[in-house]
Amino acid sequence: MKAYEEMDEAEALLEDWALLFPQNLSDEAAAALSQFVTALSSLIESRYGRQISHYRHCPPQAQKEPF
Image (tube, rainbow, N blue to C red; front, side, top):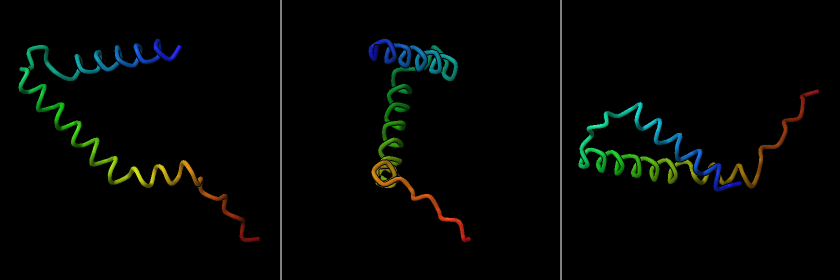
């Protein structure tokens, strides 16, 4: 089942790509865009990854009411 989900996700990404970028996008432009997205992903992961993993392991405690 997971393989089907991955294929659906890949097809959705290809459709999004086709909507966002012209079909005559050069290989150089596509490579530069790919590098940008990869660098941005790494930056976000390094900046927020620790916070995300902390909240996954230690969900926030429910606040007690002041009464």
